[in-house]
Image 1 (cartoon, rainbow, N blue to C red):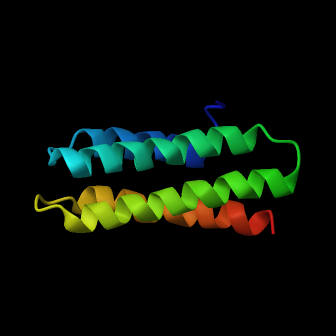
Image 2 (tube, rainbow, N blue to C red):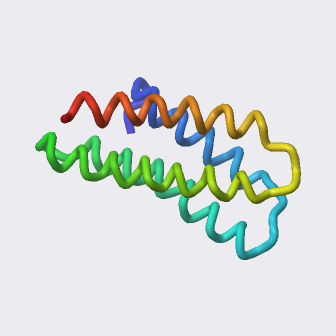
Length: 101
């Protein structure tokens, strides 16, 4: 993945923050799957040739990020910094999606 793709870099940082959390196994599994989905769908979408295909993968990444944000709302430990990163990532994803509309 290109290192100058800022949204992808943010998604990787977000993933690392998510996996560092101590969570019950059911939330851990859900958050791990959803957080990795953000980066993986960004990578797959950026490799697609048509705007329609790119947008589909970016939409999936955005939905996965929203799922992560819901999990973060459920955890008891303080995660404000990670929530802020999620908001920043959501803004980047939103701009990517709108640019392809």
